[in-house]
Length: 220
Image (cartoon, rainbow, N blue to C red):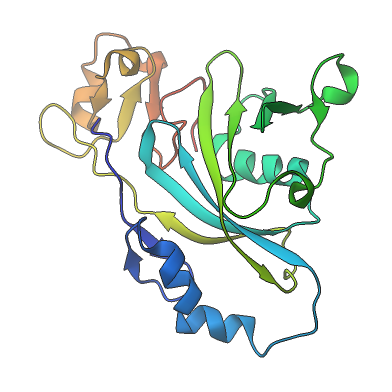
């Protein structure tokens, strides 16, 4: 699968925007400004983050969250939107410090109870791992910050990539991927070719818009 940036869609105005220009677009998007409304008394710091697959830049999203929210909140969001399959452990690595899920029951690593605004500021980049066996790695960067308050959700998605155009060897759009062949850079299959695939039906997973596509038991 070609590893190249993929355009995305603004969740406010539905415009198609490149990853390189999405931060600037969100700062001036009329629909988003309308949602934010008139200036309000200070409620706290709101962080805007770019999240993308490590080595898979075609999978990306821009989110906002309160600086008072915990890393656990961010972990939960990433699992819900992109990653969760079997309840695996996960960890953030920030400034060489590791914040682990379940750290309260371990001897190593900090707890994800830490507030995100206490460990990162605008301009900071950090890493995230889900599943220490069949690992999905993400890169996160704090690309912007504002004063305000979040709505009813702890994390809000502002923009996401459009699904990459992945093709079967026959040229048709891929709908399945072989969880074994994917490690050899192959195994993307249309419905018809999936029936004939040598590895068997039990090795096939659906093609989904996530950097975890084709891994472990992830179905989206």
